[in-house]
Image (tube, rainbow, N blue to C red; front, side):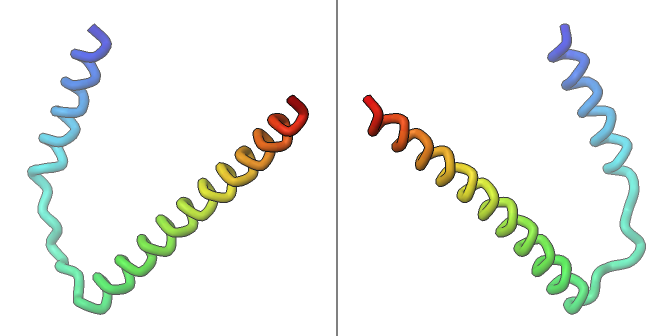
Length: 67
């Protein structure tokens, strides 16, 4: 039942957003800036996850040395 409500909610949200059009198109410079910002955000997130995984891997290796 929860899945049905979730799917229904998502469908309604998408339907309400689908009717709206963006009246102002982005210029190539704006598109480039937006893409650059998105890439930086994704890169930062990936770096954070990799650092976290590396730290946990080092901790596991330390624990395994004690066995």
